[in-house]
Length: 187
Image (cartoon, rainbow, N blue to C red; front, side, top):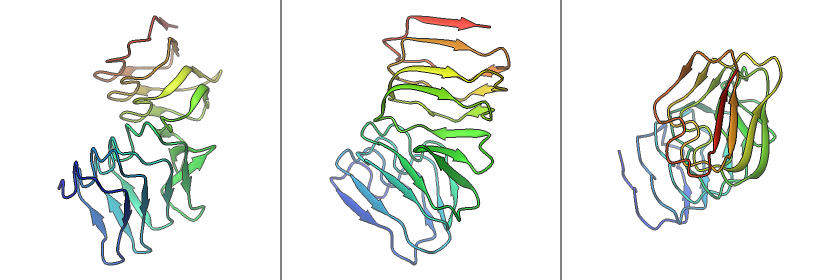
């Protein structure tokens, strides 16, 4: 855990013998811009790349588990790419989802503008929009969104949000440190 945390690495290539990257391994390395993964079955635990300088993330077919916050807080991230043969995860327009598209795991925080959460999403993952530069997040009509995860919009730049009536839980700190947020409406 925390092996390279807060170092000055800029590039990481995970060797073939590595099958587990433990908690916080590369956390808070703002200089880290690129990470390449091996072809072995791989597990990435929580906070592994949290708050790093990654600009893109390429998730290989063999990556079978991504822990909470593994790819959150990435202010420079422009998109996720997931190998089409991955059995557990999927990327749509650069957004990281569970394979069944029911959980939005992480939105690329470096993208600006607006985003409409698709109606197939039921859960916004922990920190899904953390540090997001988006000015607006809305929800597609007919969405059955149930949960806004822990720190879902932490330190995001959104100005207003309308919570769908389907939501049954909003986890701790969902909107904490959100200095631009002016209006929250509940259906």
